[in-house]
Amino acid sequence: MPYKLLFVCLGNICRSPAAENIMNHLIEQSELNGSIICDSAGTSSYHIGSPPDRRMSVAAAQKLGIKMCGRARQFQKSDFQDFDLILAMDRENYENILYLDPSRQYHDKVRLMCDFCSQHTLKEVPDPYYGDSEGFNQVIELLVDACEGLLNHVSNQKTVF
Ligand code: 4NP
Image (cartoon, rainbow, N blue to C red; front, side, top):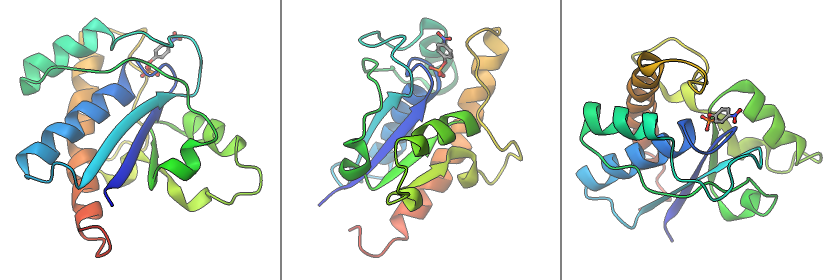
């Protein structure tokens, strides 16, 4: 059974699709295709069906040479069962996810993305939506750090492979 990761932000057009696409890039480089499966979602319904924000696609192409795939969807309660680990980009996303799990049954599956950073000290992935291209570039750098840590974390879980 593959290990399933879900990345979550507010709109599912900037941060979480970037995390998903960066993670898939690292998974391919590590030849772990099929062992770890990634998806992303937004806590809001604002952008359902939309492709990743162009500014994030440009930043990902320029900094990493990768294409951004996917269409926005909203986080749903069934995601708690369907995924092994749910990565929230910021504290507000984290709270909004856990609000849908009042019994706290899935509490341990939900983590903040920046918990997996080793090079950066920021505790949240900043929302770049109303900022400039520099903000998008910073998000990419932060997510590469977090995704590398996450890949180590998942690889070290004996049950996975
Ligand atoms: P994301 O960025 O949560 O990283 O996808 C945002 C996208 C859209 C909005 C806010 C943040 N919005 O307010 O529409």
